[in-house]
Length: 72
Image (tube, rainbow, N blue to C red; front, side):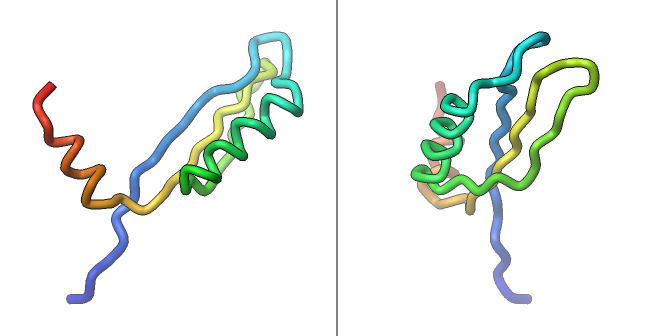
């Protein structure tokens, strides 16, 4: 069986109940995530609010796997 890509995921909610996130804030967050290798795979609007949940993924590296297994 061939190797397959394993992913790590990240999500964050932007905005508040009453106010959408400003374009500059959204753009800054997305640019930072892109520089870190994250790819946005979904944006979910929360019904009745001005909140957005952004979901992203990137390939899981051996370094990240090791850090997750370190005792705290």
